Each structure stands twice: as C-alpha cells, then as structure tokens.
Image (cartoon, rainbow, N blue to C red; front, side, top):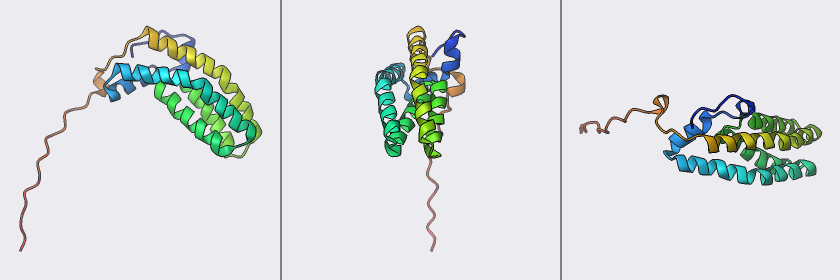
Length: 150
C-alpha cells in the first residue's frame, strides 16, 4: 500500500504489512478482502476472548487470542497485536485477573485500530512492485547426470 500520513494511525498501523501481504498473494484485491474480513470479525473475536477470559477458560481464550494476534499482525495493526500478546502472556503465566483486565483494554485499542486500518485501506492503493520484495527467477532445474556404479 502507499504511504500513510503521520498521525494517530502511525502508532497503530504498519502500512508495510498489507503491501507485503499483497505482494505475497500477488493480489491487491485479496489483501483488501483480508483486511475487510478482519474488520468484520473483530468484534466477535473480542467478545469471544472476553467471555473465555471471564470464564477462566484458558484453552478457549488462547484459541481466540492467538488467532487475533496473528491476524492483527497480518494486517499491520502493531499496537493491537502487542496488546493481545500481553493478554496471552498473562494467560500463560496463570494470572487470570490480569488477563481479564488487559483483555478489557482491547476494546478501546481495537476501536483505534479499526479506524487506522479503514483509513489506510480507503485512502491508499496497493503497489505490488516493490524492489525490495522482488525475487530473482529460480534457475531451471537440471537433474544431475546419472552414473551407473557396478
């Protein structure tokens, strides 16, 4: 994606993430679709995480939190990803109260993150041809000569 003007979004979002994703997928549209799907699913993920943390269901909490961390990183929401990582750490350390407190803070951070991601997707365009992301063509495969040993 193209550059983003500095502002509140700069702390929330790494604009290179969607550019990299678009390059890896070789599709601007698919990268945009992934970002839009992330935005649609975020509230439900946060609700599931809060519910699991409230019930002290570590397995369910880790399931949704790990998914949220990875998907946040994929779309470039670095601040939200970091906050989710803090909740995961509290769950892993067996600190359910701290995990619930940190989990509750995700809602406010998610609102800022959504705003930053929406603005980025709407105001920029993906650019698939970045010099640092291009890879040379692989050499054609040439099998080694076969030598029959007697």
